[in-house]
Image: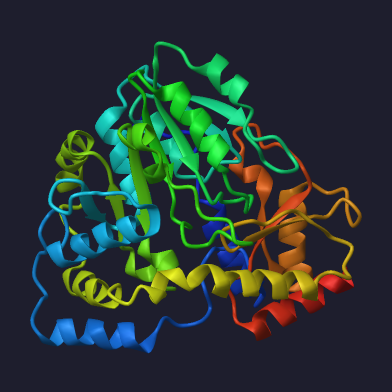
Length: 380
């Protein structure tokens, strides 16, 4: 049977590959971005209560109203932004589904989409499978900043979407207020939708607030904001995220959402709605992960790796140019097989597989896990 693939250049993701290698070689897994510690027992108790109470059938397509109301409160408390829970918030099966749905809802064949690289790996395949044309722009190394003049020159009459990600995976950097203001000026009055991937919204460090697109009135009117509870509550396996957008955009988003997943895990949504009433569940998160970042950086400060800036997320980039001349993929695989430590090579986040001798390490781990990993790092 002859099959014409819509994604002929796509294989198994690097996250699956490296996690598989970590398991095969019994390596410490700092590759895939998930915690190795549990979520709050209170949240598990709330989920169990909802299961036993019989909320085990379909949730509303838009999401449980109690959860959408709490998301609305969160957006107001955090960004002073008003999103109506009925018409402007939708609960999704994680952020990846939300991003795919946003692209599917608005991108047609020949539409151009600006993506900043290194870029999380779900953006480009979703654009290509819907016939969109990817316009990659490289973030400026070493601080992974955006050249807004380059963005301006890349925008054409065919530009229909710009995807931003802050705090940024994989670099661990964050966009500034000035960045969002520049973006706002560029898209204002144009038929361009911004998809703002903000899954690490509660992990901005050093006292700097997360610059959500929701903070900027004109930009927010053209933005689909995506977030993920998996990151916020330390339960990536729950696969629950959300989208906030003006009702005109949300109407189109929901047209695709209802036929892609229809709805999301009902009892867990209800548990989350109750859990989020305690605002400390998200307001305390920057302090928690900054302490993890600082501890990991202290542990590896004597190594031959060069630490790149980390102002958000739970990822730390390390430059290994003082250790090896290997490609980042070869070095990451050898580090896993021979030294027992798994990471992610940065080149996989570029369409041209750019080599910068950088590896991404996840520090959302128990202290003892970080200590064991640091011991390996410091011996290289």
